[in-house]
Length: 211
Image (cartoon, rainbow, N blue to C red):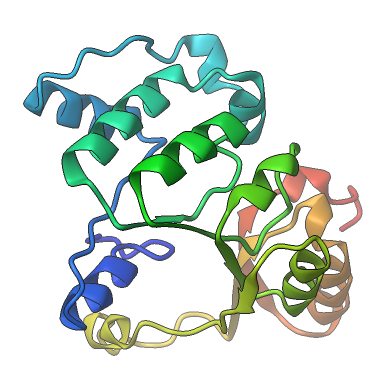
C-alpha cells in the first residue's frame, strides 16, 4: 500500500469510506500468506519450490501448482465470511473452487483487463465480470455472462503524495511490451524515432533486436 503499486488498497479504502466493510486478500504472495497462516494457526499443506517459482502464475494455476495459496485462501474465506468476493485474477480459481465459493457467499465478481486465462470455462461461474475493455464486456455477454464496463480512473490521493520536483524526463512510458501489446508497440516504435522517450517496463525481450 505504501508503494501504491497497481490498484494498491484503493478498492477496500473507498468501499470502507462508503460504509461497506472491505478487506484485501493477496493470494499469490507466499511471505504475506505464510505470516497470516502462522498468526491464525493454519498449517501450510504445500510450499512453493524453486522450480515452481520460475513458472508463470497462469501456468501454475492451470496445472494446480498453487495448493499452498488456495489452502490459505479457503481459511481466510472461513474467517472473514464475506457476502461478496471480488477477484482480480480470474486464473486462480477453477470451476470446482467457484462452485464451492458460491455456497458460502452471496456474490462472486471478477475483474479482468488482461489476456483471458487459459481455461475459460470457469468464467461462466462468475455472477458478474467487470472490465475496462468494452470488447470484453460484449464478448462476455455473448457467452451468457453478466458483464459491465468499468472505466479507467486515477486515485487522486496519489497526487498529494507526489511532491513537485525538477523535471528530469520529457516523455515517459511505464508499462508492458509483450506480444499482447503489438499495436501499442508499433505506436511507440514510431514515437521513439521522432521524440526522446524514456521507457520502463517488462517484455523488452519480445521486441525485435532493431527496436
